[in-house]
Image (cartoon, rainbow, N blue to C red; front, top):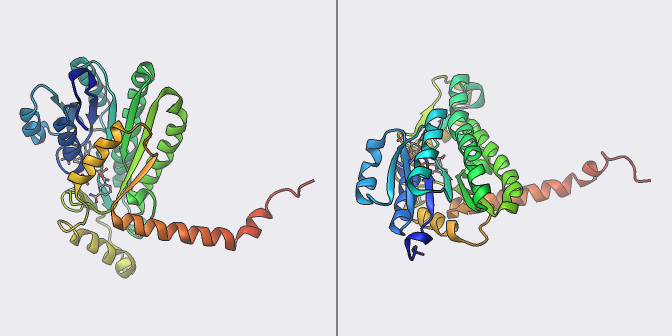
Length: 285
Ligand code: NAP
């Protein structure tokens, strides 16, 4: 789908466009004729995109943990293009460790970027979207926002928090013609498992088999992940124009298979414990 004329072009603000999903989503929207606030912590990393689309892309310095930068990012997009139609909360990174090995300061920082950054930007943009009675908020969550596993507990916690928040938000703002969608990609070939991956400096040997081996496997998959971020970006672009987008969308065969397995197990467990579950209520009179 391409914008037929200038008035049909939607205006986007995308976080974390230096590489991976953010970069591909920006390129996909720009190729379709949209206007994009292309943001990154270091705008040199996005200068090639903005040079390629000088009329429709504006470079924005945005570290999502910085309130001043969040405010000026929104103002820059509005001043340049007059409105904001689509917010993509994409910026994020991984911090891997067994729960017991987690460093408090690193866990706070992780939440600041993956959860609070997205929350604050969303809250700042909602008044504009409510006033214009339309908008799309697309969150790059993760398979880790649906399933939690050894070594990725803290990362999962940030994404579960985002999922819960955005599920509620979707219900609150549907009345204003604002659609909220969280994307849950499986393993995609971006910089996530490479330069964007942090690991705890604390190592407890007892977790070597259950956690460390899994984390080494996650690092080793770098460059070999099955998911293609360019294809994902096209899907996300199409979602931005879909009249009835889903609240959640899984991306990739891996996450689909493992989430189905989780749902099956949950269903079995619900049935197995149904009697106990029901026994907690006051008897019906
Ligand atoms: P990526 O290529 O490493 O991109 C991560 C982006 O986030 C970079 O642009 C990075 O900027 C940016 N970022 C990190 N902290 C930031 C901050 N405080 N403020 C602004 N930008 C910040 O990896 P990616 O896979 O595209 O990651 C994008 C999103 O996809 C993340 O939320 C990640 O959790 C999610 N995701 C990825 C996968 C996967 O397998 N790749 C799967 C599920 C979900 P710098 O260049 O400045 O570091």
